[in-house]
Image (cartoon, rainbow, N blue to C red; front, top):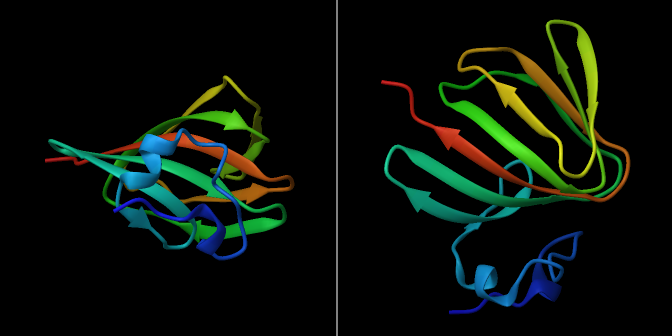
Length: 114
């Protein structure tokens, strides 16, 4: 069933192609459309301006690319800015934090580590 992008809390995800709106939603701590793949989740994510994700870690190895806006990623106390077209990598188990000063979107790959 297609998702009406106007019902997504706090953001609009209408800039993603309409076919992506048919994918299941991922909602914590941000909104995304989820594409499952073997040993990997693929998220088409959107973050409202002024979103902050506190320092955390997880068991997945994450890589992604920013498609709109800017990601401010902090790993090991080092802050790096990623703009459209730039890719990033967060190794599994690494404590990291994220900040989005402007409305930002990206494609994220969350790889299972076995």
